[in-house]
Structure formats: structure tokens, C-alpha cells
Length: 214
Image 1 (cartoon, rainbow, N blue to C red):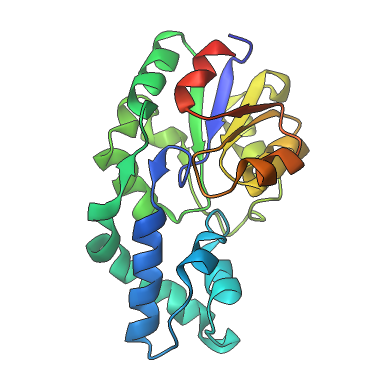
Image 2: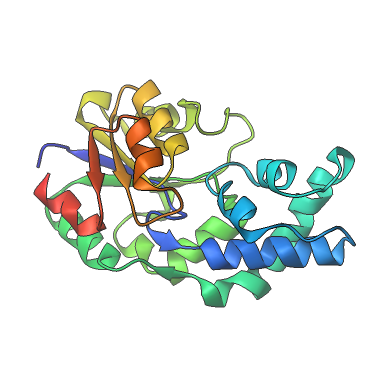
């Protein structure tokens, strides 16, 4: 393996959460009496903090953005969970990487209130310990800033030169590059190959299992 450490994004990289996110945003807007959003607009914000989703993809007024985020978090377990699953080859790939001694962590913009139950339910924590699952942190600048990747590497004693950041959006790739890591875009998530290529990642893959060949 070229890399000793891998930081994985969650939404759109390890788990297919697109439908669950869209349905929960629409349910949130309906409960709040706000106009429905276009599903493609919601999908385009996946990977950003939740408040940015409502700010950029919906007509929620600024003074109700925090309220929308709170309603979303309350509704998410009931509305979204049954629509979320791991992408093909994720479980086997994580298992192989663990066997090879690759140190792994999750670097997500998702709030821990939903991230922790999802990583447990989907079986990710059998390969990546809960202590290595990092979510939204109000003390850090969100992606695409490098803060989350830098914190994980500092906490776990990882060297940036030996670390690969894997994600499905340009926000993940920019975070990794600005933290001094190599980057890998996955084309099966929420952004297109062309969008990812424009961010000049070190690698582009179509299935997570291709990590095993790097």
C-alpha cells in the first residue's frame, strides 16, 4: 500500500444517504410550512454543513435556518434510516484495509447525533473504532477548510504524507489537499467525475475496492 492512513468521508463515500437526506429535508420544510425544495438542489449541498443545505438549497429564511436544522435532526432517524445503505464493496474493502494494518478514520460533516448510530448500524465500527469517527465540530471550520483532517491527524498521530483523504465531493478533496494529504475522489457519490477532476485529486476511482490497488 502507498498509504498507511485513510480518512473517509461518510455521506456519498461509504454510505448512500442521498435519498434519505432529500426526504428528510422535504419533510422538514413541510412541517415548517415552507416551500418544497428541488431534490437536485438538495443533493448538490450534500457534504456541506446542514445549515448550508437549508441556506443554499431551500427558501428557508435566514432567521429560521437553525430551526430547520433542529427539525431535520429530529426527523432524520424516522424518515431517512430505512433508505440508507453501504455502497457496494465498502464492507469488504474496509475489512481488507483493516487486515493490512491501514489506520482508518471517518471525517464527516454530519452531526454525531446521526453519524454515530449510522456507523454502528451499518457495521462500519467493526473496522473503524467509534473513537475514530469524527463528525461536525462547532470548534472547527467546516469542509472545505482543512481543520477536521488536521484534528484527526493530530489526535491519532498520523503523518499527512502517509495519509489519503477519500471523498465524493470537492469539499472533501480540498480539505485533504489543504491539510497536506493526498486525495482520492469517488465517482459514484454526489458529484460527477468532471466536478471531482476539476479539483485535481491524486486519484479517481469508480468503486471503493479500487483503493486496494493503489
